[in-house]
Length: 131
Image (cartoon, rainbow, N blue to C red; front, side, top):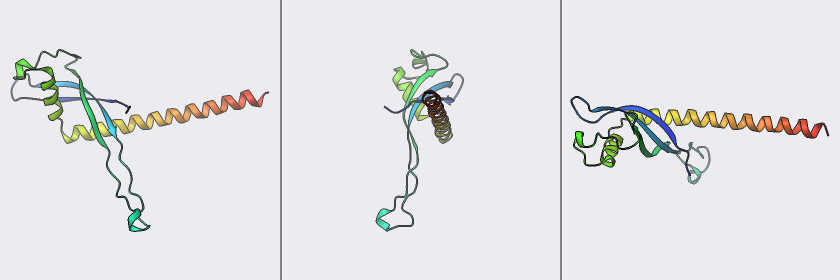
């Protein structure tokens, strides 16, 4: 199961008053790959790929986690339709910000894991070194 990340943004769904909402989104990332095989045989070349945001879900609208109560007022029949409209209203800037946030969180997780491993090795060395 892919790790889920969180992004907060403001989305405008309609012109006029009341069409702008603070939303909390959850999403996963399909991590890209770097270019490889550049200096070898042509058949070994891979241009790599960009990371992409996937599986976006609307977790909150204006602080409400469900039953947002905004669908009917904006001309939607269900909350699922308003959630789809929120996702459709996201800008390239939102997608870029999501990738940056996910990358930073993944780097923090990797650093924390490295610190944990180093601490475990120190503990093991202390324990077994004293025996």
